[in-house]
Length: 531
Image (tube, rainbow, N blue to C red; front, top):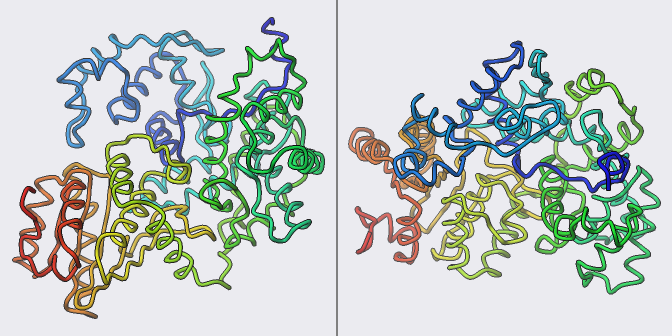
């Protein structure tokens, strides 16, 4: 097949796996911020590449092969110097070529930022000035708040996804729809037919990825026909793949261009992540279905009412202007308040505590702390910071008796986290028969733990002790920096604030060792033998 013919074909929707979560996109935009308004050249790209590597957002394989660089990369306190960056870049030739960019690092730059451009956060081209849109600046500002404003990030991504067109001026694709709108419209049709509908079965998402137009009714009928023709919920990947080829008009000969594992595996995961980044989509049935988040029905109805018809853009400037503006109404809509979110959150927590073995949760906690990928269909879709709060809450329920565990992460209507606890409150609030406990968790490992984590913890704990004197705090991170341990010891002597700082392995051993929170608090050391 020639390149020209390939461009005329329909293509499955494929979001970049380089940018799996919203925070990562914001981090990369933050690296571009100092160069806003400057003309993009290979020399400027070199500066951006250095900043991205210095900030440890991208790790070339060369770093893992050089012991000194590998250790430095693992440190949250140390950065690569200019000489080390020279070595890393020289030792990591990028065998990569993107249209409009030279082969190598310039093309790698385009790979990093291409999705942000499609989402309207930034505009760039060789020889043109870098522009960051209003929504791009909102993402950067939300990232730089202390703590990170994840709900603002969620609203920015809803704004982007409700507008995002597959057939946009930056992407060659005959498929022509707005993926989020198509999903919402089909779910609404399923609900209208059956109010008890649980939404779209995970394997049916492949049809959305391959759907060629914006005809939601036709897709709805396709799903109904497919469910009638095959045993619902027990489709094989092969059957789904064959149906996707038919949808796009592909033949047996074309299979070498569209891989089954892409259409039924990786692209499905990325699709779910991007739809969930909006906050309006729920996971049901242990990740087997995606559906409306009933806590955000007002937002869903607003999007369906105002964005179901849309202008098709062929001009990059016009598309960037459209995508880069925020719909202020999205920021004002409040969550549906006719349900008790605390009850939903705690019910989900209990359900997961009962359905998973404690050692499985321990493994997931170690994985998220070491940045290893989860294989669990639900956990892998939840962003790492929110997943850490969720898993820690489950571990507390499973291992400490008589403990009332109340996490504060934001949830969907199934009780699963959509983003972390908002600033100004503890991540998790616990109550035993005597003691209350504020649990704070972070993936941060450097000396900034003191300023970003322990100072707010002290404020929260001092306020909580005014209401209940028998209140302590537990601070958990993958690794506790020695400055954080020293500060925790100091603040206990200076202000009587009891903050027990544990790295994750210590924390897991502690909750295995003690039967209750009260037992742990009664032990001044709170460290069993072997820690």
